[in-house]
Length: 166
Image (tube, rainbow, N blue to C red):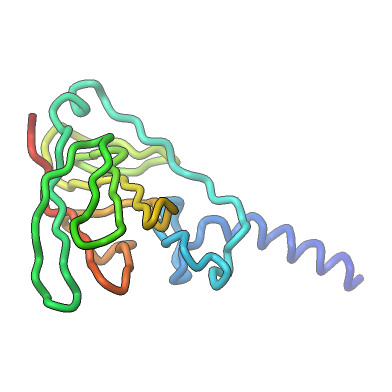
């Protein structure tokens, strides 16, 4: 009987945990840093990454973003312009950011991320960040909600400032 209960518990955990983020919330779009995975209770569990589907018009209009880089020691923020699909080395750090997708009016439905319109109403950028060549973050930065799944680093803070139309 205990073996059956254990198997049922394991099966439920396998179904439920991949949708949780590091803070215990639910959602398929999680942006927890990949560094320190040993302390992540979900390390090793497969996470289903939501598909990003954007129209050609959205892709053509939004190719550049502005990213704010806050030096946590001096509290000085510098804004940089970064092109989607290109690596940008953040000055004074060993960090490189690559915007993967720029979604001007972010929405998610049924495991698919898309833009409700071409307007930059709810800008979100899917980014990959490496440090010393090792990926430390793969997730989303939100202009209107910077505290949602933020990139966490001991020396700098990052925020999506805005998109620049083509």
